[in-house]
Image 1 (cartoon, rainbow, N blue to C red):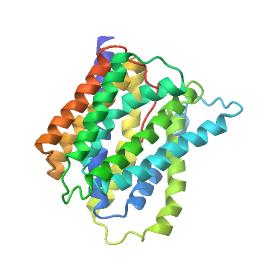
Image 2: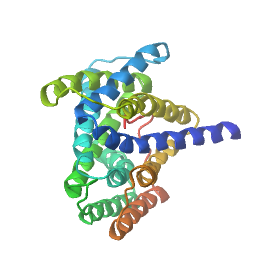
Image 3: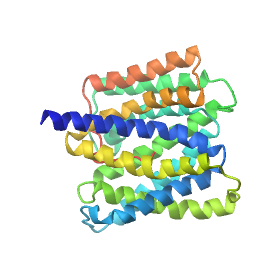
Length: 302
C-alpha cells in the first residue's frame, strides 16, 4: 500500500512537471509557427492518440440536458483557454504566466462557493486574496523585454485563461460522476482541433520553413503533455483522494520557473521574486486550514 502511494505521488509530481514544461514548449513553438497552428497541431495529435486508445474510454452515462454542460466545458477549455493563453505567451514570459497558474486551485474553490454552494473557510479566502495581490504585484513589477514585451497585458490574459480553466473544472465536477476523465479530455482535444483549424486557416498563414525542433515541440505538446500528463495525473488520482491530488497543481509554477530559467534563460527581477513569494504564501495559507475539495478527475490540457 505504501509503495502504491509513493508511486501515485511520483506520477503526480511528473504530471505537474510536464504541465509546467508546456509554457516553455509553447514559447519555443511560437518562435517558428503561428500560435493558432501550434494549438491546432497539439489538439490534432492529442485527438489521434485518444482515437487509438478508445478501448480504454471508460464510462459514458448521458443524461437529458448534459449537452449544455458538455458545450460549456468545450467553450471554456480548450476554446477560450487556449485563445487567452496563446495571446498571453506572446506578451509575457513563461515564468510570469506560470506563476499566474498558482491562482487556479483557489479560483476553483471560490468559484465552487458561488456556483456549487461549497463552503469556503475564512483562511482560504485570505489565502486567495493574498495570492491575487501577489499576482497583481508580479504583473506591475514586470519590465518589458524580448521575452515579455507587454507583461501587464500578458499576465492579465493569462488570468483570463485561468478564469476559463475554473469554469471548465466546475463543469467537470458536475459531469465526472457520469463521464470518465478520458472521455472528457478526449472531447476537449477533438473540439479543440475542430475549433482551431478554421481559425488558423483564416487568420494565420500556413507554416513554412519549420525546423525539426519546431515540429518535435508541437509533437511533445500534443502527445507527451496533453496525453501523458493526463494519464499520469489520473493514475495518481485513482490512488489517493482528489483533495490531496489537486494540491499538486501548486507545483506547476515551480516547475515553470525552473524550466524557464534553464531552457529560456528567463529571470524574475527582485520585486517579482517577492511577488512570487507572496503568491506561494497565499496558496500555502489556503492549504493550511479549511481546504475545499477540488473537482475530481479534472485534467487540464495545458
